[in-house]
Image 1 (cartoon, rainbow, N blue to C red):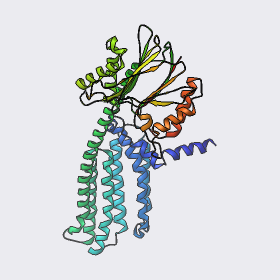
Image 2 (cartoon, rainbow, N blue to C red):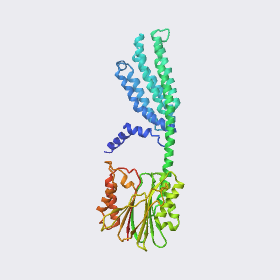
Image 3 (cartoon, rainbow, N blue to C red):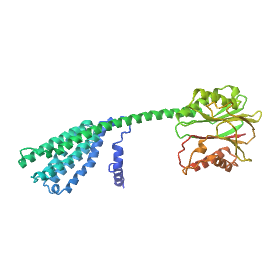
Image 4 (cartoon, one colour):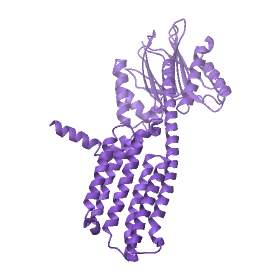
Amino acid sequence: MTWIKQFSKLKSGFLNPFAFFEREFNYSEAESWKDQTRIDQSFIRLAFLLHFMMYSTFAISEVRNSERGILYLGIIFLVNVMSLVLSFQEKFLSWVIHISNIVIIFFMMNLFHESFYRFRDLESLQIYNNYFLLISLIVIFQMFRLKKSSCFFTGMIAICLHIIFVSIKRMELGLEDFPRILFVPDVVYGLCIVIGTYSVIIVKRLISISSELDLEYKYIQQDLTVAKQVQENLFPGKLSIKGIRYEVMRITPNHIGGDFFDFVQLREGNTGIFLTDVAGHGIASALVASMVKIMVSTMPYVLKVHPSRLMDYIDDSLNKQFHSHHASAIYMFLDFISREITFSNAGHPYLIRGSFTKEFHEVETEGAILGFGIKKPIAEQVKLPLVERDRFFLYTDGLIENKNREGKLLGTEGLLEILNENRFEKDLGVFKANVQKTVENFFGNVALEDDTLFLIVEVE
């Protein structure tokens, strides 16, 4: 069975044209297209695969009946095998290619010359001459070396050898002058030199640009990876906060995004919960979200206990510093001393409240988007009693505005239905897992287009 596995591996590699081209002509790595040794090795292996097309000349009766036709094609086969073997070493590959080309072109032209030796009138001579046009394929094929001089060198060899064979034929026919028609292949060889050379110049330029772009892309990806790590560090870790338990889910289609949440722990034991969604997604929104995080962390104490004024502060800051960016946000201040919740919602999806004994429902409030300075105060301030076992569901709009495979939105109604189906689960971790699984089943394997975040807070 071992030899069968080895053959299967060989078949899936060298004998598989798709795998062969993917492996041999993959220049995605920066600067790999400048490795002439590697390119010449791939060129020789490709030439070996394609040289079998030469044997189709046996379909021509004159070639098939030629006395030395099999000998010439046999020599061509041996030359290609020798070149293939030599391609596995890295020395003198350029000489291997040039000598192989000279030998192959010489014996192919000799094959055509001897096969049509009896063509002595000018009309038959034109047919004899046309078969030499096949050599132009060898000339144009040299552009795969990605070397500007390759087509020129091979083309000039073809022109010189063709003129020699035409001269022999002229002497055989006893012609005093060369008929112009005999030089048609030489004109074609010249055109192949021009086309091949310019193609190499253009392709090398395109590959160079592509390699530079790939390199820049790798640098950008590295920077984004670092940026993601930095942003991850801005999010709160798994904290133990007296008075509440919480669970969170975050999905970011890009490396970084504009959804963010944080806990503001105050000295007397009270806690603030802040969640924002900066418009857009990607680097710009992530940077603005990071700035908002810094604003919330460093703002005066009096604002942290007054949600409406906190929103006004962020609105003014965004309006002055980021004219083209805006955000929605919600801030809850949990006062465990007075057993009261104060919160403001600035253009964000409504806060959802529920528990084991009562269904989840939206707490509707008024508020405008942050960053435009639309009104003062930017969001109304609402008070709720702080009730043990109450659960609060805060989320960004990506959760309800992403589409599934059928193009449907989850919507607020769908989200409330999921929450209420699972509201009797007492363990907060299991509750969150069930909600997340149901949401994932709704979207299926569709890649989400927008950042998605939800935070579940339970009062102890």
